[in-house]
Length: 148
Image (cartoon, rainbow, N blue to C red):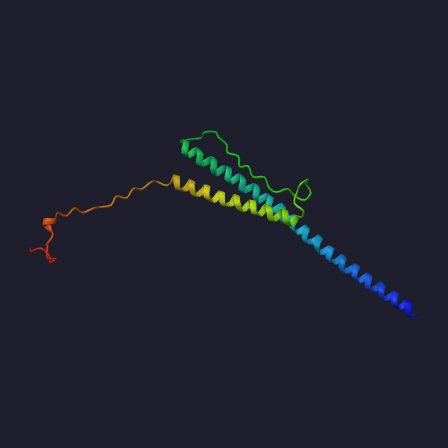
């Protein structure tokens, strides 16, 4: 009877351990699913940023040429490979983090391209410094105002 109780408790402990391990695996699977979805959203954002950057660079080039030159600038920025592809990242989280970094780089490049475009399209203003040429003879030597 004691042996039956021992094996019964051991079975319960094994079952509890398996349930908790399954729960951890389930939570891990859920986290990977969340990162998979985040990766998909970031991939769409990355593609949009790339298109915006290409457009901004093409606009800047055409404004410098004085018209539509017909030149298309392609931004070569391949996102990191997903875990489903050969040579891809080991997890969806790693893939998402890598893609997020690439998107941040594109975002920075886009901001620079827009700033350059804005700077080149702004009218150039030249400010001339006004200088007063005062002859030494017209200035009083004592520092007092000249007599009226």
